[in-house]
Image 1 (tube, rainbow, N blue to C red):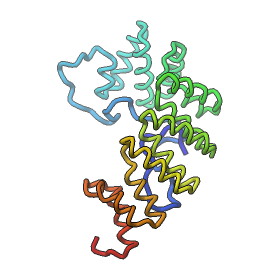
Image 2: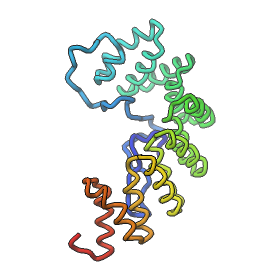
Image 3: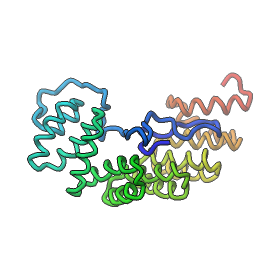
Image 4: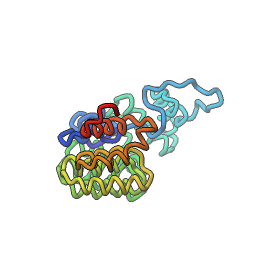
Length: 260
């Protein structure tokens, strides 16, 4: 298990399936998270000539991390705390963990809560769980929603599911869909409490969170409520949702509806 998920836990109709199948690094080996922008690290978009290439955040957002390190270093040295944060992220994305940690620690001292959140991943990996969780709580209270997810997953690694669900639900209520997915999957896979899994999935679905309809259908399938499962899954299956189509196929299989 890892503390920093990069995506929602995978949905599976099998009650023995792992609750998390995301490509992340183990705490003992390092930390990993998606960049806080839409572009993925591997993206190399065409540079818009109108962009200010002398601005570290702009350079970072177009995926030029080595160049961002150079420019953000200059801006951080001139006193920009935001530049220091993006410098740390750029170091991390280029796998320079030593400088990343050092940078996050420096900007944490300047009360940047994004940096406090980032530093906590290193502290947790290094074994100081209490300090890490304290920093995540501080960051979450200050509006860094990801810190709530990190807290929840950190407790999940200790099999402290009540605390895990408590923090993940708080993050989910603030809009973090990955936290919502973890709550449902903890109840489905770890705790085997399907009624609660269904209740939370419906709660998050009503709040407009993606990824819940297939979870609702999966739980209903496991409860052998095939008519309800079909009712939940058909709308998203008809919109070409692969997870919904996959679970719906299993429902039809159990009903011996070979054609469907």
